[in-house]
Length: 365
Ligand SMILES: *Cc1c(COP(=O)(O)O)cnc(C)c1O
Image 1 (cartoon, rainbow, N blue to C red):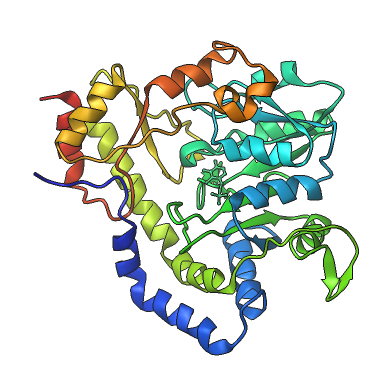
Image 2: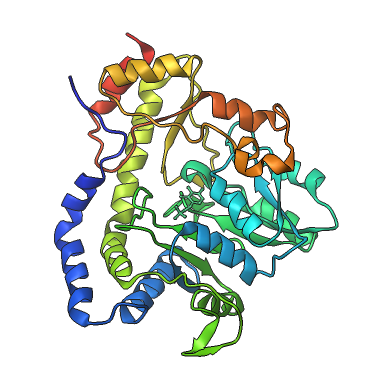
């Protein structure tokens, strides 16, 4: 039986091994293990890659979202517009500020925040909009920014799945007031452990984040506020610098695989991803929607094909948000997606020849 893993992280390491090993050795040899030159260099290089003026390295993607919201002035009593269909981190970041996540249902075809639905969810307490570039496909940032400016709101993008994605020819990284990144190992740009960052064009937000991530301190042992310890690790920064050189080539392989899936699955009774003409997705995930998902997933597993579900339970139906009192059916689009989405194998080290095998197993022929 062939084995087609959902994602082959080891193969990615093997391809970049010489560069990654040298980068890690450089940090070990330097004798400097918190912040410093390696983190500074990654920040400069990643900001340039994204077309942003600043990048601040943080410990993980959740902290990037949470601390960026604080740097943008979100706090107790505020409301933040979030997608109903996202990873729970998007909501948790809002809750960690003492603010309330206000879910808005997605566009039924792109699965991203629907600008037309945001307006109805705004109240006098709304402070920010937090679009997610879900599965690596950019949200409609022009429409979201126009709406935000009209209502005096700030915008934080959750770009944890969108390294290298572009919106109307411009890379994700500085459309909104701030952009939060995760470098969790399985992301398109992944570290060897937890890592995250925020990019922004605003020097004040970048400066606040540098203080927030380091105990509220700018000068050692002088604490101007009650901050956090959420610094990007230099070992991870060095590895990320090495891997950034591979990102565009690896994303191109993902795009070719997505195109091959589209061809191989055309005409099947499966809902394929819909990409607007202005969007260049990073193809973090290739998500289809199928009837009778459990049986399909088992059939693929029987062929040695790994699949995952992103995500099986939407945030509003999690025990973590039980006290918000969302009844079943209250956010029907998010709930119907949770019931039928299926993520097919996707990654720069997936053999293009596997697409045919996967498509045949999916079509059951
Ligand atoms: C991965 C992810 C996060 C969280 O990132 P961590 O680094 O795991 O904290 C947040 N939002 C989305 C959409 C993600 O996919």
